[in-house]
Image 1 (cartoon, each protein chain N blue to C red):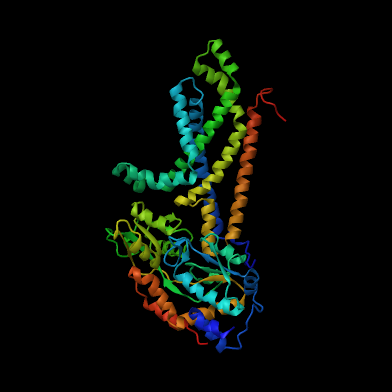
Image 2 (image 1 turned 90 degrees about the vertical axis):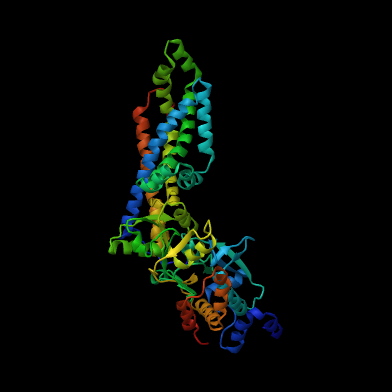
Length: 295
Length: 238
């Protein structure tokens, strides 16, 4: 690593600094199968969502971007430094809730940067990065609806995303409190919101952060949808990678911890959520502090 | 591949129950859509062979419309768009008061799509009987209705049995698209298991085997029907 590249690449500065400051940290792929295959292909493959703005989506210019993607770029920078490949290519593979686990497990994707909730059951299959976003199940309803909590939707029809943690929580609540809510299955965020807008259902239970963004940016006409209710679940988002590669997992943890410590993460949050009028929640701020593990 | 295989997932509670419920919905959707498609398809197919030009036009337009639009799109249109075009009270009834709206929408969407394909098979079957037969029927004094009832249809129905088998299998398989409007049939339930357990590969494998078993059973049933109704000497058999 030459001194000039250190000064030229201001964006990589922190990662390079960490590398220089810690001579014990190995360079090259070492024993890591993921780093080895990245070095072999001279490309890192990122799994992304197509329409989960502002986390992970394809913009009007057909480029992949978002809050989750920007955070993953810190990992890409760390991989570039580690492998000493400043011209490492980035390949993007679109994923959905059905294929994401298989694509991570079979090594098509090196790191998944989307809106995946980190759960212990899922940790049996994949490795997760530190938590970079915290949300919970809330309900999207039409602005005219007087309901304040999900219990006010007793006996009504409520849409959920198929296979989501939101669905599981709503079903549990439905059973324990005998709410008699009829669940309707939607396949993505846009369809769930369309069901509410079309009056096919009374509410749409999904990750609060995502439906707040939807209500703020996509509701037609503006202000016709709102988000109600307490957080019914705790849904922490993490990036997924293949399980059993401690080296790569450590590299990812290190990249995220640096981002949390330098308050870069907060700036990225502000960049993506600020324009939507959403301020950072105290829980997430605390999570950043706690996960900023010292070098 | 680093994947923690667990083949007990699709056969353990509650996931086995989910798969079975999915199978039941697959059968209910495919069965009802098949009845609708068969009746409508036969009627439209006959319309397309009648001497009356207007009747043939109606049949041709129907087939063109339902055969040219992808099924996925048709289901979406029936579910999201058509109710918005209807008077508010009717739309409200469809959206909120009709029991099992996703089920009935799937049956209608899948049934009409398939009926256009069945209509073409019936038309081909009737035309395969040949002009000679219908002219002979007319010459022996049968009315148009009688010539269809006693000459053309009994033979045509036997001709179309093999392609109808394929169409029946298509209905079973196409019913998986009903998941896109929220019906949790077999494929939908497999995705459900995937979401909860992250053991999607095992769940989809189980669903695949169930589909194969279903279609093999359907093939055997249709072959049996073909044998039972066969008229000796009518069709070349191997």
